[in-house]
Length: 114
Image 1 (spheres, rainbow, N blue to C red):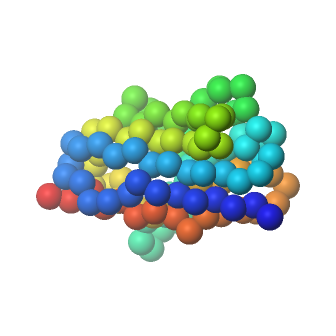
Image 2 (cartoon, rainbow, N blue to C red):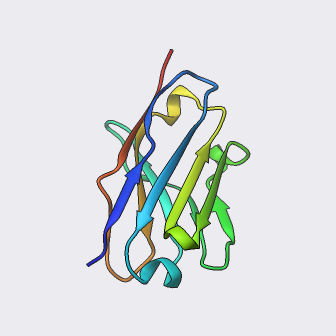
């Protein structure tokens, strides 16, 4: 069974930073790329970034230069370092392995507000 546990969200002022973590269970962590998505109220879930098993990274344009995705293979964990946060970054953030199955965690809330 695949388990995904996101953490690290919270309330932060504009311009602040947060680091999200996602622990990925099982062998999927070393077999598949893992991505981060987010969903703001009233909007569709959107792709943010992904990291492959070899460490290649990809980002949506709106977060390039502000967000950094990384992985710690020893801890089966994927991170999303978010800097220079903006109010429009407010959303529930999810990690998602690119497996044949459709697996999602419970998400972690990020709120950017003064």
